[in-house]
Image (cartoon, rainbow, N blue to C red):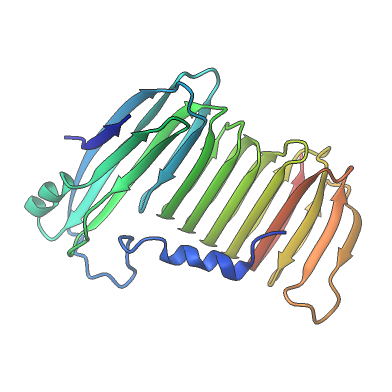
Length: 271
């Protein structure tokens, strides 16, 4: 049975490495967990959105999809809980201790995974969330791919291992990622901010050709490119400056686009 509890200048690349120790309950690459037997359960919960302006999601392991819905008045949280263990009986029993918790606050919904110590098991929760498209979205997830689509508000993501895809976002964006690629389609608000940093992976950002923003790239390795964008006042840091930087201006420079990679390529494309 589903188990849930319902209750009323860019950042330095070195700084994002703290995401690697977000939670002691995450999947440990050196774990000796036995995964021969699996138990799973579906869950689905719907809550009314009254005055809340934000979804805050704290996950651990598993894929996440968040979809904004025009004129929605409810938020639906559904998906699959998964447990792997060394026997089917143990996996089935452990499934009851893996919970999806929904705290309903005055200003935000706090959804989070509540899981026990691993003790030779492995856990995951895969989330599918649909919400009003004007709700802000902030999430932490250690392992698992992330999709956020059709949200007309700010999006903030912190992750260790993920492929992050943003589709038709209209708002400020902040992404801190250790390993993986970011592909984002973004319409930046006037005076808005897009701040993305990836330690090991590429950033591909698609924006309208009439975007107005100051650009700041920090690229330790391995390069950058612009496509179909009229970037003015393009400047490169002098030789010997570390990490190398690129600055420029789009339009009147009213917003800010700050992108940083440690080992990867930045591509910015006009659409």
